[in-house]
Image 1: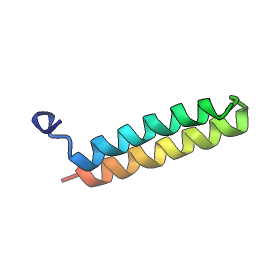
Image 2: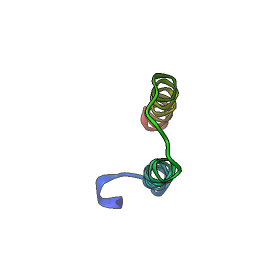
Image 3: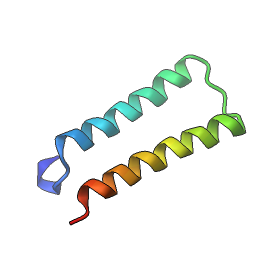
Length: 56
């Protein structure tokens, strides 16, 4: 984790995202266009936040 210059917070965020996906699937989540769009939006928000944190 640290050898790749990935902060603990970022790594935990990715882990939490993975857990959210598994939980949603376990709850019978179905891929509808609206849910895919909102999911993609939340991923883009997370990526933009990470980029903002790493910009020098």
